Image 1 (spheres, rainbow, N blue to C red):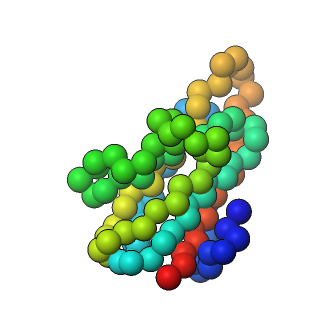
Image 2 (spheres, helix red, strand yellow):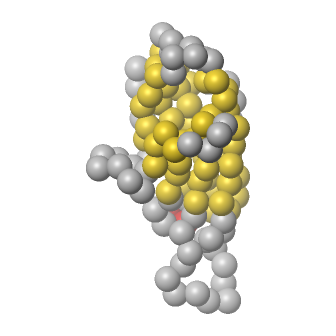
Length: 112
């Protein structure tokens, strides 16, 4: 999934349950192309994620894209900046007493 990109050295992951939301504040450097990939355990269903600036202005939303692969976002920043990556796990349609948890990972690759 990161073919053509160099994976950064940071590993970002969390164990989440249906209905959870997680946020990461990540730094991206000027004039670099990035690929952001959100992977989750299948038990969690289809994850939604957003990329926002620090004023919480939407840059990308996987729920609003027409792309077939909603787990990936390719972009380039003009200036070095921090961006917020917000991940949401959908609620389960059939609630039960058994709550499934699963790992969600954020992978970031870059190229000059």
